[in-house]
Each structure stands twice: as structure tokens, then as C-alpha cells.
Image (cartoon, rainbow, N blue to C red):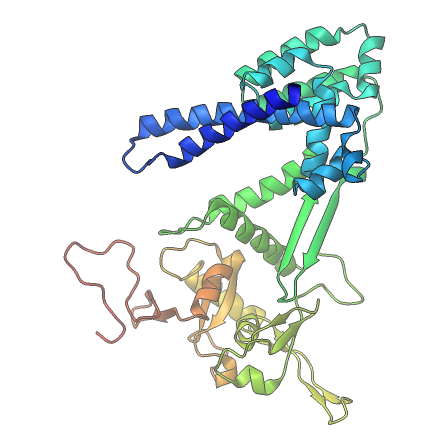
Length: 417
């Protein structure tokens, strides 16, 4: 009878979802849409509560054995297609809710989210329960307080309350070593791009966020359409640029750390893009165009290789922008010359207006300061030009000039007109 009743309720739920899917939202206004969304989110919470409750009952009754599996986490990964992390989170939540009736009731009413429940679950870990008992802390009171906070506060506040409670359970315990829980994992893909994840303690994370945020907030050029995630990534790369350029990093195998690119001279002088023509020190394949961009402001070493791969000769490093020239360019340009950009000189490369590989001279007249982002733009169709009065102009690939404050009715100028 219970399975038939459950089937009937699920059938009605499925029919209700079909009705919701059939509704035409195109003519709805903001308040109506927000009311609908609020109802859907509440229903989502209530449904998640039933999922957690059912997962717990499946675990207690060893239901996954029916499908030849040992644990509910394994069943959720294989049958529900959840990630390992998501499957474990549902299982842990189901176990925790069995000990937290007030949180369970708030979850059932839709006032608490599954993500909030996951934050609360450490409260009922055996070690934390034992510590609470030793201090005569009643779990029922903690349960009621957490249910109230979860229902009436933002996610961040709930997490702070839980962390504060757990910290108070062992106020005299040893301060953990923050370096033990720090990790950085980087995955390199076939095209040379990287994906990574890092885990930092509160203080370490604050240092990284402060450094990235300072660069991000200082580089907000006019017309910037990047998302915050893109801005953060650009700031992280800029942070690496600044650190490498400062020369303060530890020596790595007798030399200062630097970006290394290997490229054949024929590809370097070829004006075409040349995909996959150059290789970085860590093995990533990049285009010849990208290598030329990096060569704008770096050291170039000549190595002559024989037909059998043996090194016949190697030349001394040639500094493309000597220190004296860079100081002169910084004094003249002050910062990135790309229209609308206010990146300081310390963030910039010295760009050759006519590339040195095309016989462009390494001179003040042929140099311009460009930040990493706009240096890339210039090597992909944009152009910066200095007029006779010493003013910089920036042109799009179609030849039109970028103007920060064009006069009303004045057409945009082009390089030819």
C-alpha cells in the first residue's frame, strides 16, 4: 500500500511539472515571474528534502543491494548520474537530518536549501557530538538555533555560525598548520590551456584575493565587457607578469624563472598565424603569432641545429628592449597607450610598432607600452599609432578609430580618412 500511495503522489507531481512546463511565460511581467520563481525554489527545496529522506531510508534498508551495489553513494553515481561529491553530499545530509528534527522540518517546508543542510551536517559528526556532550551542550538547542538561522539568514551567515560553533567545541585545541590543508592542482590540456583548482586556508585565501582584487580594480578600461570571472583570471596572469618582471623570484636551476618559447626562425618571420608552430617550456603548443607577441619584450637566443638535431652553434641572448630604452618608453607613455586603458607602466610590455623580425628598429620611435590584454589585441588586428604631436590613436581591425568621448554628430575617423 505504501508503494502504491507513493506512486500516486509521484504521478501527481509529474503531472504538475508537466503543467508548469506547458505554461507560456513570454507575456509575463517581472513581479509575476519572480513570484513563480519563488514558488519553484520552495518546491525545489521541499523535493530535495524528500530525496534526502528517501536516500537515508534506502541506506538503512540496504536498498542498493537490489541493484548489486554496496552503498547509496555508488547507486547515486551510477543510477542518478551524480558526481562523487554530489552523491556523498546527499548521503551525508540524509544521515545528519535523522539527528536534526528542527532542521529537517524547515527543510520539509522549503525554508532551507540542500546546500544549507550540507553546511550544517558537520555538527552531527561523531567527534563533534562527543565534544558537545562533554561540554553539556544540548544538540536539540543547537538544532533549533541552526534551523532558525538557516531559514532567516543568508548562506554566508549560516556558514559563519556553523564554523563558530564548531570552533567553540575545542577552544583550547592546537591551532592547525594552515599549510597542511593548502593545495593547488593544475591540469594541462592538449591545446596547452590549463584548468586548476586551489584550496587555501582563510589567511592564505585572503592574501591571494587581496592581490588579485587590487589588480582587477586598478584595471577597468572604458568599454570593458569582461565578466568578473574573466577580469579575475586576467588579474591573476597580470600578477604573475608583475612577479616575473620584478626579478625577485628564487633562481631556478642557475637562472631566473622566465617564460620560454621555442620556435623555428622560418615560423617566426612568417607573417601568417602559424598554429602549433611554437612550444613553451612546459610543453604547450602555441601559434607563431603568439610567439611573436611574446618576443616583443623579451630575450631572444639563436640556436643553430644540424640536420640530425645536433646543436651546431648558439648565440648570446639579445635583449629586445634594453633597460635604458624601457625607461625612456615608460617616461614617455606613462602606461598602456591603448585608448581607454589606464594600466600602469609596470604592467606593460614594450611593443614594437613594426616587429623587429620585420626589420623594425629597437628604438623609442618604434616602441609603445601595452598591457597584456591590449598587447594581445594589437597582435590580433588592432593597431596603435602615434601622430606627429605625440598623441596615441587606437584603430579597430576594420580601420575605425576607438574614441572614448566622440563629439555628437562627428563621424568616427579611420586610418585612411
